[in-house]
Length: 82
View 1 (tube, one colour):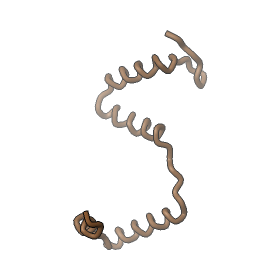
View 2 (cartoon, one colour):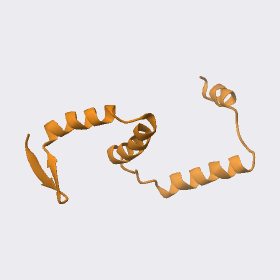
View 3 (cartoon, helix red, strand yellow):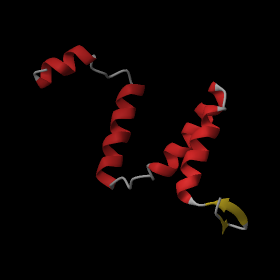
View 4 (cartoon, one colour):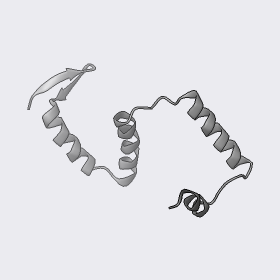
């Protein structure tokens, strides 16, 4: 096994690390897997910058929901021709 330093910790090399991590995941209970998913998802999919226009659209949509102005999924599908 090959070890290297990472943030003051000694870790195994990447090729071995992948297999070791997969084996560790198999030992976790369901609640631990859910928590790990949150962490890994954030690492694998970094946050995306939202434009001011998109942010305004999101805020408008949330305000519509809060005010009770909404469209059913079926109506939206009809409008989109789905």
